[in-house]
Amino acid sequence: MKTEDKHLKGEGQLFIVATPIGNLGDMTYRAVTTLQDVDLIAAEDTRVSSTLLSHYAISTPMLVCHEHNEASVAKKIIEHLRAGRSVALISDAGTPLINDPGYRLVRGVRKAGFSVTPVPGVSSPIAALSASGLPTDRFAYIGFLPRSGRARSELISELEVAAHTHVLLESPRRLVKTLEDLCSSNMSDREICVARELTKLHETFVCGTLAEVTLYFKEHTPRGEIVLLIGPAAEREVTDDELIRALSASKMVSLPPSKRAGSVARACNVPKSRVYSLLLEMER
Figure 1 (cartoon, rainbow, N blue to C red):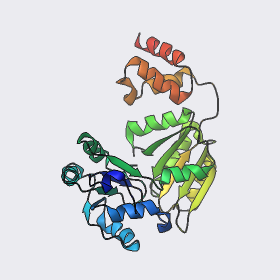
Figure 2 (cartoon, helix red, strand yellow):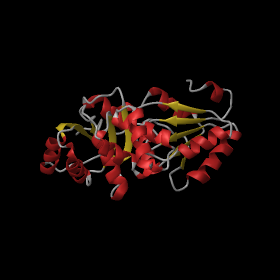
Figure 3 (tube, helix red, strand yellow):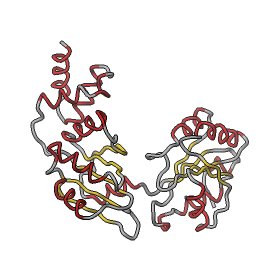
Figure 4 (cartoon, rainbow, N blue to C red):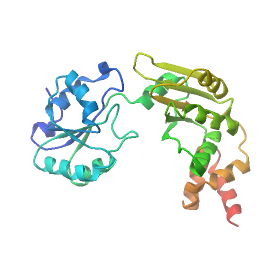
């Protein structure tokens, strides 16, 4: 059995271990041996992780690490690493840190001078993207949409003109409302895909135009864990008004002019020089 040379030498390190998102058969051999070999497993919810560990006869002790105690647990983990012990971080399902806590822990461990080693595996956003049929040469993962307010409307406005695929998460309770909001933003003919219950018995991909998929889920109550994928806008001439709205978004106004123009230019797939000229006119 082998995990990492430094661990075999007795030097503590942190492993970021991906676990299944539904089908226990998706656990990799390396993930199993790593969890068996480390001295401690930091888990988001030990009750959830106990089922997985029991299935693979892994008896390594666990401690809880979630967004509310991450700072204090990070200190404990670094103490273990200094003592020559190695630790694995796992989430309830999928790849840790992807829409889950953990980056503060990883940053702290690296600052303390210890290695952080990924043990890759399944991730629901990537799994959904790979089977969606939408363009994959360039995409953005944005997690959950803000539930309401200006932040939500601004992000939807960016999606309206986006030149690449976007991958989101959504709850079944809010899916239809989100689809309706997108339809209201001149996106009803946009190609999208809703992937639900990935790797599980009732795995389903519903693909088509936004209008078609919205109608489907109005007639079929959405259930389970959902990944929402939105294809790129069709190539068209982006108006100055659209660029001005993008430049005026609250998350943009604090950026230096060059970065602000570059970010909008990439999102709208237009030359930066055009956006920068428009920005100078706005500021005048």
